[in-house]
Length: 67
Image (cartoon, rainbow, N blue to C red; front, side, top):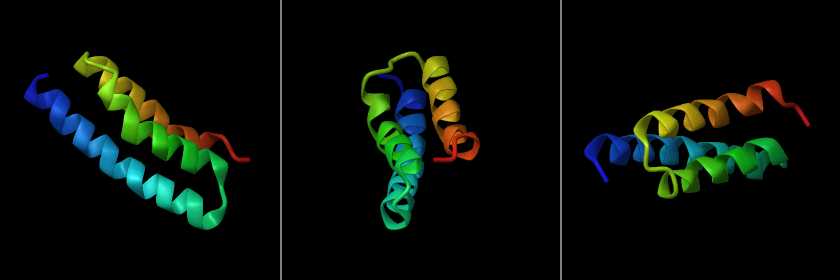
């Protein structure tokens, strides 16, 4: 694991905590699930470019999907 993947994982995990706390308090399933995914997907993705792309998609998903 390289340093950039570690730092991007830390950033996306921190944002994921915020999303999951917001989703839990507001009873909104999309931010909650995206937050959990943001916290756990860096463990399984090793390519840095894929890590960034998936992270950006997961961060943008609650903005476009309203349930």
